[in-house]
Image (cartoon, rainbow, N blue to C red; front, top):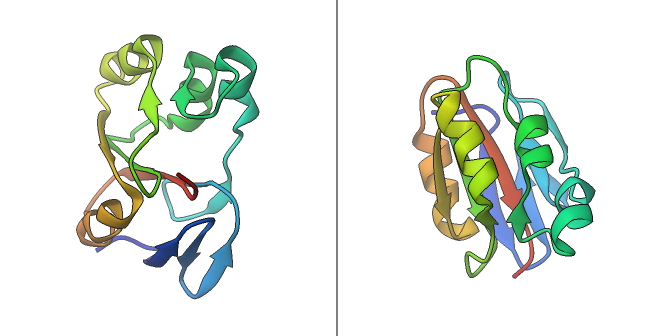
Length: 121
């Protein structure tokens, strides 16, 4: 399965390898966890629930074949059409799941996978 391991989520936080993050996170190829740059989407849509092309460009990494998105406790996060097209052109398959359902999928995934986890709604 993937490194790092996502332990659990609750509203407003996600626990990764025993460390609690109280903000959205991006898990890079190689397992580095960083804070999601929400403003890249918020600037365009007034909300971080729609992922903009600018954020898609920031999230994507060369060689990534799969992006798993924990779309919030009720799965509110969506890709804009431009963001979806960006990942498609780069042959990166995107899967959006409510965050609690994304965790086991992430932990069992293999290969060049990146993750984005939304911790609220």
